[in-house]
Amino acid sequence: MEATKILLSEEELKLVQDTHFLLTKNRIIEKTKQLFGDLADILRKDVEAAGLRLPEAVHLFSPKVFKGEYYNQLPYVMLDYPRVFAKDDVLAMRTMFWWGNFFSVTLQLKGYYQQLFAPALLANKKMLVMQGFHVSVSGDEWRHDFAPENYVPVQTDGNNLEKAVEGEYLKIAVRVPLADWNNAPELISGHQRSIIRLLAG
Image (tube, rainbow, N blue to C red; front, side, top):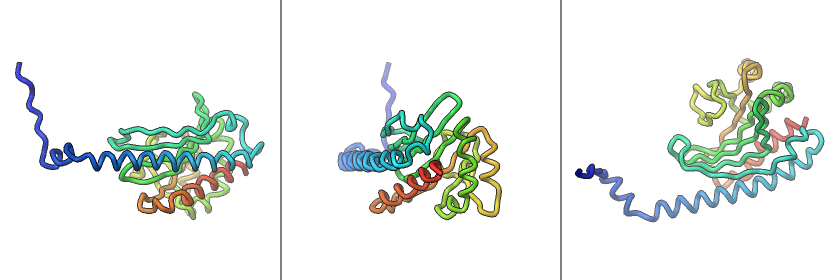
């Protein structure tokens, strides 16, 4: 039996012979992991400073940084902290680097934690609008892209946040452009701190 002939395009032929791109990509991923490790250290201190004003479960799980290659076919790095993932109750702040797209900071709430923190989100709606937060409207709590059918901006004069509060889960997120890489630590940390302050009341 003859082997199937797999052909490469001209662009693919150039890339398959080019080690520079992949080595550079690997360095960027390692720098992102280092960045997220540094952010995790800052976050841990912020959570400790918030102390008893946060649920006890938050203090049980340390930050987790992990990477993958195939979120919608593109590499990513994630930092989860705080992170409480139970069957019906979720409290998670997820910081994400998604190759070719953005950094994002997401607060995901479900069950007990959604009921606990929904009033704080509603009370701080103006702050969420000012910082450019979006609210999930797609019905898919594990979707992270900012397509209009997935996320819409939180509205000061609308009620999309109020509607989301009544849903099966509640998820808000904000983007930081990759072009802002050199300022990303401050920008990302600022959004993370806003969420911690919001949760701690």
